[in-house]
Length: 151
Image (cartoon, rainbow, N blue to C red; front, side, top):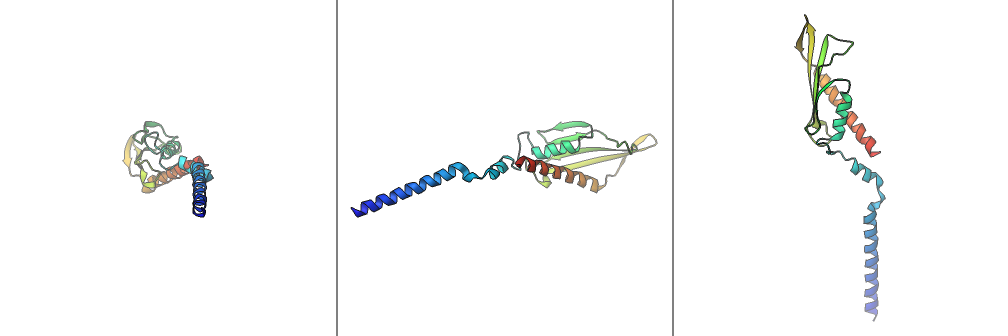
């Protein structure tokens, strides 16, 4: 009789332990921060590309007129823009989002520059630092958007 009582006691302890584990698993351990981080994952693709990179690109280029904005393909193309402080020079940009993840290599910026000479716009070189700075601005803004989404 002692054997069956001991066996019943072990069985009851195992059931109790199993119920406790199931209860903890069901509540997710109470880690709300991890849940929010999962919701604001680096891969957000409801528009076809990473939404943080998309929004950051649009915000960064908001001062320029847009000729194309394709969220499914991840392409933004601006029209020519001349800074009012330097009307003898104008720029045209294209931003391509290459991946669904929020990563530095998921973004490519290309720039064209023209200068006005004798009433004619002539192609001019773009400094590599200009393109790099634009990419850095967009990436920083995208990361800030993601951080604010996490809370």
